[in-house]
Amino acid sequence: MVQENAREGDWDNILTAHQDETFARTWNSKNKKVGKWKLDTIDEGIVKSIAISQCGNFGFVGSSNGGIGVYNLQSGLLRKKYKLHKKTVTGIALDGMNRKMVSCGLDGIVGFYDFSQSRYLGKLEFDSPITQLCYQRSSDLFAIALDDLSIVVIDAISQKIVRQLFGHTNRITAIDFSNDGRWLISSSLDSTIRTWDLPTGSCIDGIKLPKVATSLKMSPNGEYLATAHVNDVGISLWTNKSQFKKITTKHIESEDDFANMLLPNVSGEVDFNEGIYISPPVLDEKLITFSNNPRNKFNAVIYLENIKQRNKTKEAPKKQENLPFFLELTGLKAGNSAIENELGKNVVDEMNQRAVQGESTSKLLDLDASKEYKFETDFTKLLRLAKYDEFIKLVVDMTPSQIDFEIKSLSVSSPFSEIVSFLDAMKFGIKSNRNIEMIVAILFVFLQSHSDAIFGIKKLATEEDNEDAKKVVAALRAFEFVNNKAMDRLDELTKYCSSVTNFISTT
Image 1 (tube, rainbow, N blue to C red):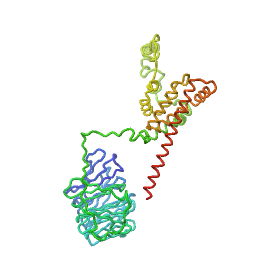
Image 2: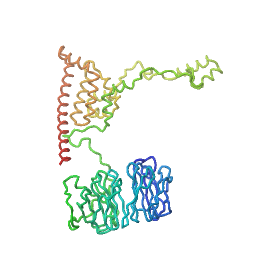
Image 3: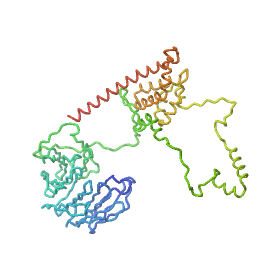
C-alpha cells in the first residue's frame, strides 16, 4: 500500500495491491472509501509493486510479467508504458521533481528513466534477484535488497553504486531511510533489525527480536520506528535514542554484540468509556498562559484602525451606464411597473404607503414613552457587577470589531466608575496568568481610544484634587505594577526556555 497526501481531497490518493489480482485499487483517505479506479497491469500479469508520485498525479503499477504502467490518478487513464524487465517488478520509485524514475525486478536489473521526457537512460545488472527498493527523495539515493543477503545503495543521478552493505544472515524483509538520509534501517528473517551509517558504511546498531520483523518504517521526524512482526496483529513503536542522548557510530563487528529485545508490551488501545480528557486552562499557577486565539486576531485587535482605513472606499460608487432593461427600475418594487401601467401611478402610490404604515419602522420608536428603559450590554453589566472572571472570558472570545466598539462605548465622564472597573478587570486578568497577550492587546486599544480622557483625568486629579479622578489614577498605577511584574516573569520564563532549548540542541 502506498499513499501521498499532496492531492488529498481532490482525487484518490492511495494505491493498494492485493494477492493474485491483476489490477491495483485506488482509495480516498479523506472520504475513507474505496476509489473509482482499477488500474490494470499492462501485460495481464499480477500486481507486484505500486507507487505514487510525490505530486499525487501519477500512479505506477508493476507486473509479475515485467511491465510497468503509469496512470493519471485523476482520470484513471493509462499514460505511459515501460517494458524493461523480463521478470517480476519488485520496486518502482520517482524523485520529488518527477524527473528521475527507477525500477527493479527479480531479473536483477535496476532501470533508470527520464520520466518527464519519457526516455530510457540506462540500467545496472546484478547477479542476484532484487526483492526490495526504498527511495530517499531529499538525497536522490535509493537502496535495494538482493537475494545474496546484501543491501546496495545507489545514486539515482550518477547511476553508480555508493555503498554495499553485508551482515544479514537470512533474507531481507524491509528497508527504510532515516528522515535525514544518514541512516538505513533493515530487517531480516534472521530476527534482527540493523542500523547502517551510510557515510561510513558500517553497522552501528542492532537488536535481536523474538519475532521476525516483516515491515518497518521511520517517522517523518525520525523520532520513532514502526515495525510489524510475524503472527502479530499489532504495530510496535520504537523510540530513536539519538533524540535524547549521544550515540556512538562505532562499527559492530559481530551479531553477538546485539541487544536481545522484547517487543513493546504497552497496548495503545483506548477505552472510550472513560470520557475525553480536557486540559485545564492553566497547567501551573507559576506559568503564564496565552489564549487559544489565532495570532491574526491579536494583530487585528491592535491594528483595527489601520485595517479600517485601508479598507475604506476611496470614491463613491458610480452608477453603471446602459443597464439591462430588467434592472432599470424606478425605485418601485419589482413587478410594480406592470401594475402601474394597468391601474395607474396614484393607485400604486397608495398601496405602497399603506404597506409602509403597516410595517414597524424602528424598535426604539415602538417603545412605550411612558416607561423607563435601561440599555446595557453584557460587557458593561459584568463590569458593574465586578464579575471579572466572566468578563475576561467574554471579552477574549469577542471579535476585534466588538472589542473596539465596547471599549469606545465606555463612559469617561465622572464618577469614572466604568473606567475603574475596566482597569480592575484587566488587573485581575493579568494576575490570573491567563490570556496574557489578549489582555495586553485589549488594554492597548483602551489607551489608544481614551488617551485624551485619561490625560484629562490625571490633570483633574493633580490640579483640582478630584476624588473620582484619584481613583482612576490609583487603578492605573495598580495595573502598571501588576503588569510589570507579569512581564518580568514572562521575560524570565522565555529566556529560561530558550537557554534550555539551545543547550539541548547544541550538546
